[in-house]
Length: 550
Image 1: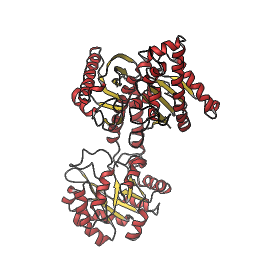
Image 2 (image 1 turned 90 degrees about the vertical axis):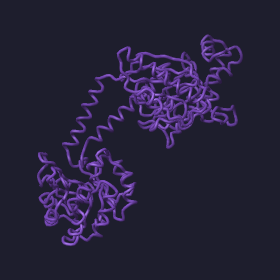
Image 3 (image 1 turned 30 degrees about the vertical axis):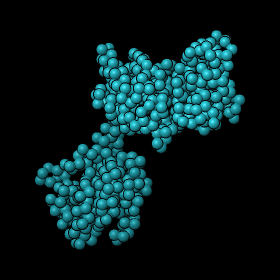
Image 4 (image 1 turned 135 degrees about the vertical axis):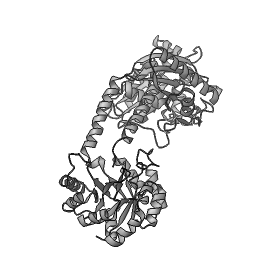
């Protein structure tokens, strides 16, 4: 098959590396050939194989192009890929259509660049350069390599700290070299394979994730055992819910116990530096209290008003409820002050995660959580995942417009749901004589007409906002939390009634409108949940990065 035909056959296709280590149950040419047959039947366009015996067995089984390699232990005790011309010649005689060899700096010291020219001229097959850096790729391409592969990134002295597949490196290679780039090494899942193509890869090689059953079984078995161990061993997470009026904090166990809690006034209007000092003080106090009770916190979670980049723990945007809060790198600053890992999330999103982790939505895949207090926030869980949006701006439920041109909201718009359903709105509806929303709720529960009317007015606007959410997301349950929900069954009953009159197919939906089981401290549970999930995600990433070698 000509070079052009090989390139056409492999372009934007999958290549499966069919190899087995010594002692593996599949370490014989016949088994390797059956792996190759299965791979081709599944859509693989090419095979990468080690050694003339395996190459010959595969050639007798499938017509797909074969990349031949020969792993040899060198004098320094390390394995090298196709370190001699004779090894390449034996692979071609066995049926290999292409030869790959180690063209890293170490490979070059063993004559890899000269070998490229000799293989091409004497054996007449394309040569693929396995490299670890851009500089190595450039030298190999200049020496005549027909393709460069990222196979050895993470396996050489200068790159061993790299433990995961890097799409960005593929992109760098494609921009630097004039020959096609094939992505190989540490590609363990479908999304990584997709990302390789998005980064410009000519083709993608996958090995262990497809052809090493014992490795796949080991990873699953380890995951099951580790998760069981983690569930049996309790961890503890400090959660801080930074609200516009009060800052609540507490220590939550991995099984959902609130071991202690605290609350103090938030210096909301004092500016960024004062708020950061306030958070650090609350965190340090919570850590001391946890340690005094014999519980070591594993991480700190912060739930804050504003939209948050959860990857960096930075506030992307906050309203003037917290002046100067926009752009604050909360996680980095607090981590430096207290030494614990710090996760940061929008307070409404944190509430949603708390309901999923510890609350009434534990078994739901589609639900909405809404918090009613000084402000109004919320979040949507759709198809088993929190809806964050492309720019972390999703779930601004409090800023759904329910009365165009109406009351001014803190976000600068007019007519937002928040302006009609927060604590200030309830006091406005009730008129003079009430100082707090809790006083209005207590009066409504006692049958005071103006207080009952105030709760009904708020319920009407809340139902209007929920109508949009139900029509858009079709949730299983809407969970309400916050100060306006406490001891206020009347509010939710009226919301449910109004929705039943306006939502099509109400009876078939069986939508549950309910107050959170997590009560007053749902925000603390939410903050603890994001800390817990941050560590779980980090653990999973570390476990994967130490996993399969392709």
